[in-house]
Amino acid sequence: EIVLTQSPATLSLSPGERATLSCRASQSVSSYLAWYQQKPGQAPRLLIYDASNRATGIPARFSGSGSGTDFTLTISSLEPEDFAVYYCQQRSYWPLTFGPGTKVDIK
Amino acid sequence: QVQLVESGGGVVQPGRSLRLSCAASGFFFSTYGMHWVRQAPGKGLEWVAVISFDVSDIHYADSVKGRFTISRDNSKSTLYLHMNSLRGEDTAVYYCARPRGGWYDAFDIWGQGTKVTVSS
Image 1 (tube, rainbow over the protein chains, first blue to last red):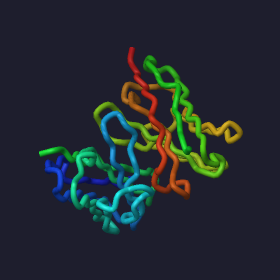
Image 2: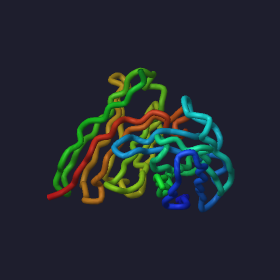
Image 3: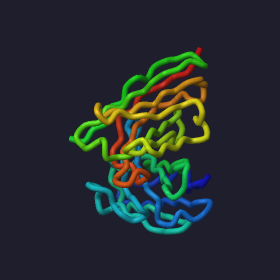
Image 4: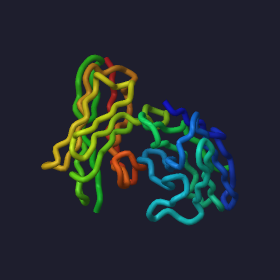
């Protein structure tokens, strides 16, 4: 099973600041990595697929990069609605696996 | 509009069974593989199972293999999850999710979730 590790567990930032979230895979998943945002009481929302492609309707301030085992989600300038939990997920191997999440909260 | 609506959750005793449903609308359900993903209270996301569009291929997480069965009825645009021998650790919100394209692609459409509580 591919284990995804996300860091940091919590990121405390202010609106307007840049957020950099990391996801590391226990073995190469090529570019088959997605990022999701989840707010309390809501279903996850797809942000990025295949490492660097923004999903439909996702603002340009969200960007993804990386390949192999190391991936990054960057939010260039945090908006109030961006404070949430972010999960990475790999689709390279069964079983599909998610990372434990990074919580971005307001400083 | 594209939509997934889960139902069937509730409180169930350990060892009992439950069947979840996911009604799809707004897209050609019969052409998509479909997944179940769950989230225990206060925890992260856990992938549970997938079924291909034509039921030819099915995969399960080890944690549910042999106890849960995923199925679908394309004539009703509905996905199911039959859960047997339920345990406390199966307590979670269960989401159905549609992949973008290929059956193991990223999930671009999610239902609102249905809550399952396993407790005596």
